[in-house]
Image (cartoon, rainbow, N blue to C red; front, side):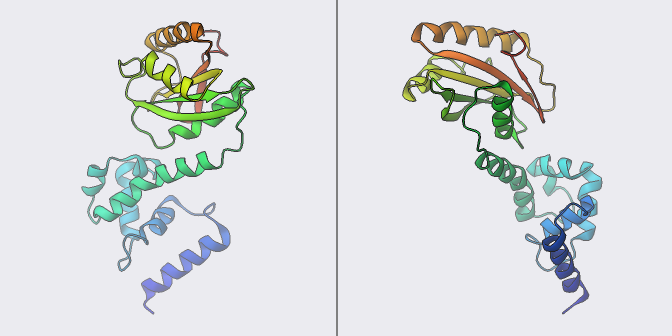
Length: 222
């Protein structure tokens, strides 16, 4: 067994015994890189990636093509790094036990996980029954929340398909603040007013930015 193989075994054993809490950023990245680069020392590359993108978040959020520009990063490694945030999102979503969104906090926490790792604006619709229980949620658009693709007919059709009593709209502000724009407010009011005659209530519109969120209902703007 080479010295390099021994280092890998020690790092993996340390992770299995202690978890990642005591690891430096480059050690975490080095560990991840083991699985796409099986026969080379990944320590130098881990340092190079952290230095290039400013930390783990920067590495995982970097565009695929920019990752490929870093010396030592191949297609498999770039794909693996891009997979990490999306795996996190899927994991967090699957762990959501709270399916009754009868408070702003519950709704906000439920929806925050939908946007982990998303660098483009995305729009989700959550359908609720009369007891505020989730009966369906769906990504309805990627792009601006006030664009033509996010229309009342699409939202109404989804709500009717689920026999929803109410819906929650949610979208993100990537790299920005969870503050509603004028367009966000206008879109919310138009959807609210269009759904009301159908007996469907727009319960809230939640805007997410990183780990923060704002509820238009809670702030008195819906």
